[in-house]
Length: 168
Image (cartoon, rainbow, N blue to C red; front, top):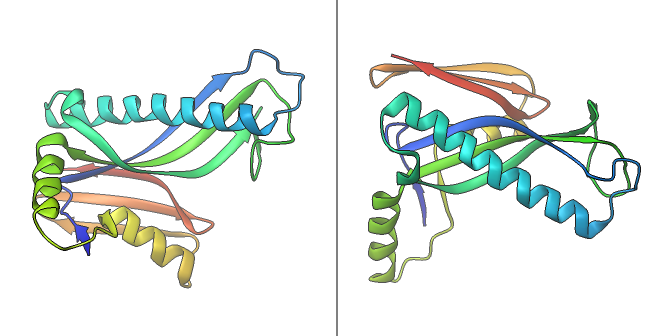
């Protein structure tokens, strides 16, 4: 079973976050790569929550990240396919983060526990568009969703969502 929610319930943010490495000249090994990714995703989630809070007026701690996708990574400004094997000072990730209010997530979890359904995923517009971009003829496109009292824009490049915004 897969659940999709409207943007009024499921919030997606594209966040760019970077950190400085302590030992910029050393080659990144597997363990450091995993730790850097964990740290950047964790700090990126906090940025995403703050962004949602500023737009909704709901406290950041009311949201939980239900999906995070690394859209791209750079070291010292250069795109890299992965961190392991590279060196550099500044590691930057572009992340697609999907948030759900904790109360909605708890209600969903309670419903699933009392049923025989198995959850395959939670998604919204951005995750659906990302699949379209990767599997269709739209590797670079601008998607516009007009409705629900808001207009949303999603910009895709090289088969992935790179930016999104909305206005009333």
